[in-house]
Amino acid sequence: MKPFCAFVASSLVLVTRAASAEEATPSLTPAFTDASELVVEKERPDANPWAPTPTAVRVSASGTLGFGNYTRTVTAPQSESGAALGGELRVHPYSMNGVLFAFGSGGALFGPTVTTVDLGYSFRPLAPRFMSGVTGAVYFDVGPSMGWVWPTEALHHDLGLRTGLALDLQVYNVTVGAQIVYHGGVPVDGPVPQQWESFYTAGVRAGFAFDFGRRPPPET
Image 1 (cartoon, helix red, strand yellow):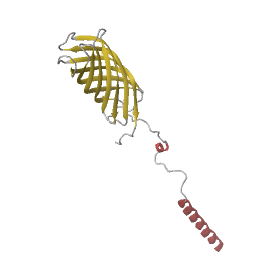
Image 2 (cartoon, rainbow, N blue to C red; image 1 turned 180 degrees about the vertical axis):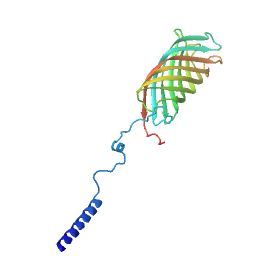
Image 3 (cartoon, helix red, strand yellow; image 1 turned 180 degrees about the horizontal axis):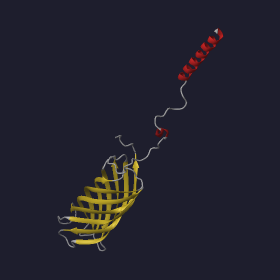
Image 4 (cartoon, rainbow, N blue to C red; image 1 turned 45 degrees about the vertical axis):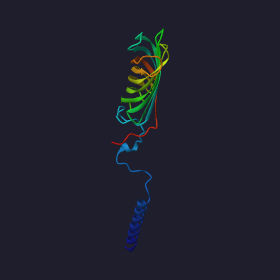
């Protein structure tokens, strides 16, 4: 009887020691409460590409080509039309609000020729959060403009404003679209009477857009 009791006691001691050792040793297999936790997801764009909070500094550059019409209120001829071309650079830093740098030039076959340089405010009410797939963008802009006009009575400069609307179709980083722009101002030098001079342009545009300094969207 004594040998049997000693055997049982020694067995209990061994079982207790084994259980203690198992609790002290960390498990190599992590415990998961949900099978989905076994999947490590890669960082991906937000499910809603039109989410309102921009997460990058977006820079877009476009060239433009179209039709231009030059008008003035006093000096003849009061209206001339011709081809117009130009380019623009837009920068929107983490916001729908941005800045526009633009230039343009156009003129009729027998003059005048108008060249403009613009610095303005760019508002982007619609644009994709990520440059992925086929999306679109809308831009409004307004700001001061400087114009060079010749060969009317003489080369002169106009100081005025620019306002415009642009609609873009974006295929990843490539943009194509259309725009209409109005320039208006008054002469600030030269032998030209005080008058309101305007330059309307409408045409197509194409270019590229890129994101810089991307940061993760805020948690909801």
